[in-house]
Length: 114
Image 1 (cartoon, helix red, strand yellow):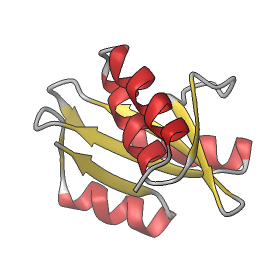
Image 2: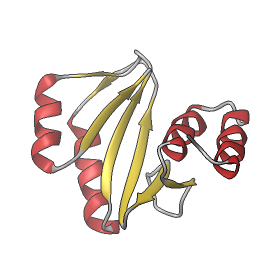
Image 3: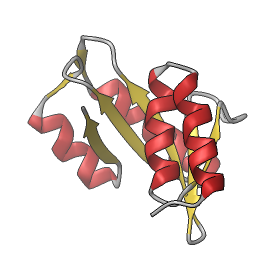
Image 4: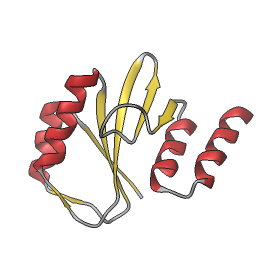
């Protein structure tokens, strides 16, 4: 159950009608403190909970995701001291199992939201 304040923030994010807002609204509903368009270059949103800070990279275009996104996420993690999350929104982005395995070894979280 969410509080009235969280529901207000969720509805505000959903009214923007963009993919990053929809994904960020899910993180707010899960109890994270979310910032959209943070001053971190290459990051769509940041979320923090229990002292752990995550950097979310949202991909929704219909294309194949390769190794370059993994190296970009590693670079962001090293530079800003955050845990990177790559979020694949919808059925558009395609990612290989090899890329998923390399991301797991690097400590990068990959999630698909439909």
